[in-house]
Amino acid sequence: MAKHVYDIAVVGGGPAGLSAVLTGKIRKKDIVLFERSDFSPKLQKAHVVDNYPGMPQITGKGMMQSFASHCLSYEPVVVKDKVVNIFPGDPFTLVTPGDVYEAKTVIIASGVVATALFGGEKDFLGRGVSYCATCDGMFYQDKDVAVISYTPEGEHEAQYLGELCRNVYYIPQYKAQLPKLRTNIKVLPGIQPKTITGDTTVEKLVTNQDELKVDGVFIMRQSDPVENLLPGLELDGEVIKVNRDMSTNLPGVFAAGDCTGKPWQIAKATGEGLVAVLSAISYLDKNAREEQK
Image (cartoon, rainbow, N blue to C red; front, side, top):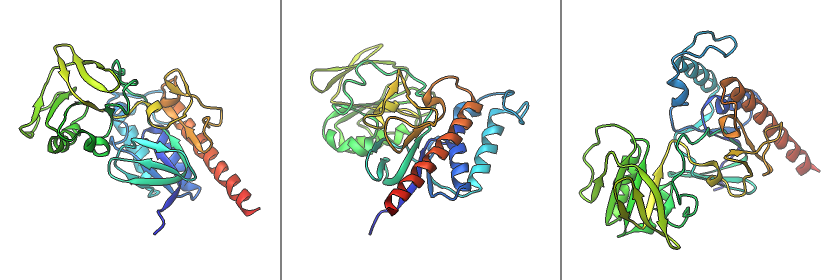
C-alpha cells in the first residue's frame, strides 16, 4: 500500500507555522503540521504583546490560543511529535520518533534553539550524539549513556534507554519532581553538561562537577539545531539562509519565522509563514504543469 504523500509538511506550530498552515488550508492544500510543544510555549509566557496590529494589550497565551484555534478550525492533520530528520527526495521523507511521513514540499518553522550547543556536540553527531532515543537506542545495548533533557519528556526516553543500556545518567535541565525511574537510571539534578569528548566516537561527557564515561549522549531539547535536521541546508551563521520568497538552497524546502533570523517578532513570523506557503504552492503548481507536458 502506497504511503500517503502530503502536499506540504510544516515543521513547527508557532506563529510562522500556523500562518503557513492557515493559508495553505484555505488554498485547499493537503497539509501536515508537526507540533509537539503546545504551540510556542515561549510566546505563551509573554505577559503582554502590544505591537501586533489589531490585538492591543493581548497576552502571549491569548494570542497563541487565537492563532491556534483559527488555524485548527480548518482541520489540518496535526502530528504531536518532533521531526528528528528530513531526507531530500521526491517526495521528502520526515522522520519522527514514532513514524515516517512523506511530503512534496517542506516548510521549516521550527524556531531557534534556546540553548547553546555543547562543546563537541556537532563533531560527534551520529558518532555518539543523538536527538532520538527511539531511533538510535538499539546501538547502545548493554552500554552506558547520558540523557540531557530540557523537558520532562526526556524521562520517557530515559526509561526506554534503561531497558536497553547498562547504565543511564539522566541529567534534567528543568526543575520538577521526577517520577521513580528504573534502578539502572542515575538521576543527576543540578549538573551542568559542558563538553562531549572522545577520539572517533563519544567517550566522555564533561560536566561542571565530573567526567562521565559514556558511549552515547542523547540531547532532548524543544527543538534541535536546524543544521542537523536536513542535510545540505545552507545556513547564514546559525539561521537558515532564505531568499525573499522564503525558499532555501534546496528546491521544495522553505523556511519561516525565528529560524530565518532576526528580528524575532511575531508579525515578521506570520508574514514569512504566509510568503513561504504561497511559494510552496507555486512550486507545487509549477511541478504539476511540468508533469502534464
